Length: 247
Image 1 (cartoon, one colour):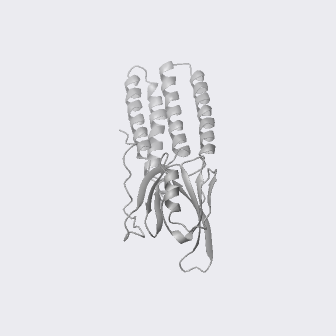
Image 2 (tube, one colour):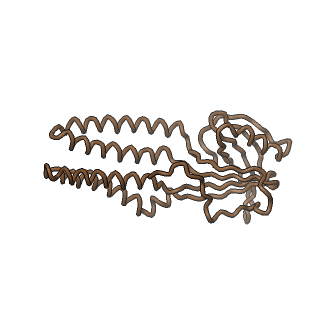
Image 3 (cartoon, rainbow, N blue to C red):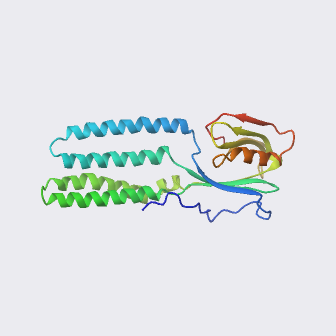
């Protein structure tokens, strides 16, 4: 039903700038490219609000415990899934290091697992409500309100062009070693950060910025040392603490 741990499949439009050179180091990782501390606080605050409101809703509907419980479950499940999809989004990253420089690609996969969950939840609860309606016709109303609402949520997510575009962003970056002006090991996350200074093609102005390199667990020190071997000796190497990506 769910395929959460499947290997990353590279996007078909990806074309490496340094593809003519052999890869010296490369890896893929799924990361949360935003302030995770704030996102986690938001998740737990909203989760407790949803849980408390679910309890209050259940206690206010005391006519039928089965009917009330199912509606409350639908309310709690739907909002919780929506909350997780907002606060725990992950981006796919693939990195490639060659003799000329470093490049990486970032993209998002559309959350098909959320659609699958909503589709199954709507179908199973609809069958249950219709079955219970043979005992008590009032359950037909629940079938319209509960599974019907979940079904509308599924349709809006599955066929909304704006929603799909928001969850399928694609970016490709390439940097030569001479463009990197500072390297930093982030102490509170599995990130190596570097600052760059480049002149864009067709532009006479210098563009300065920063890039977060997301690493696998216990990999960042090795990645930082590997990158350091290609940099000029006058490029500063520091340690820092950060949580917000610098693009």
